[in-house]
Image 1 (cartoon, rainbow, N blue to C red):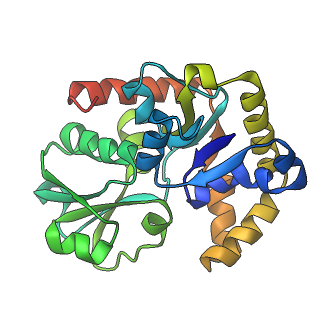
Image 2 (cartoon, rainbow, N blue to C red):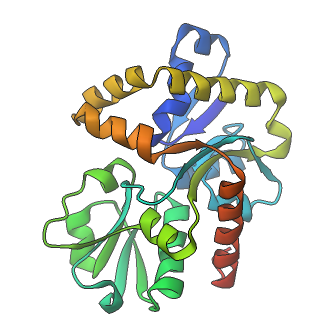
Length: 252
């Protein structure tokens, strides 16, 4: 059985278990790709489920989410940021890192509903310098969004902006798949993987620090204090609000 996963730091506590002896016995293998392409793998049945952008749940009525698990945050998320050469109310064009459809949808919701403007959106590869050569502002997600240098730029953390506007957390990603593929055994394995990641978070931090050449205290803060991995009623309410805002703008 193959499941899809994003290659970002925030997913590591949910999947590192699959590389342990016990995890390998589950028979589940991981395929890594950007969340937008992972959704295509689910659509074409090349993976049974994938950790993909939460907006995909609204776009696929025959898909279901694995219960109790999410990648979410309340307030600053650090890894989904908008970088601008001008104040946000002056932005006329935005280069979008199209890796995540959720982040792309959220930035459009925020511009329309919170900042009161409707800039032009330009799909772009996630390279900040080149993106800002093409547009007033640029959206970056994942590790690149967290590590990008922001000197001389206006920076908006999308998680923080959403929270200040709605008072709600934000759900960035879910394990999603066709409803018939979300079996009890798959759910059990994914819940076990999340539990292992929480119990062995220091091991996850050490591994990630070596891979990303980041300080362990930075990764520890991000994974332990910023990221949230459990679905609560507040997260469900936040998903409902996000779906309403996306529908209002015709994004889904």
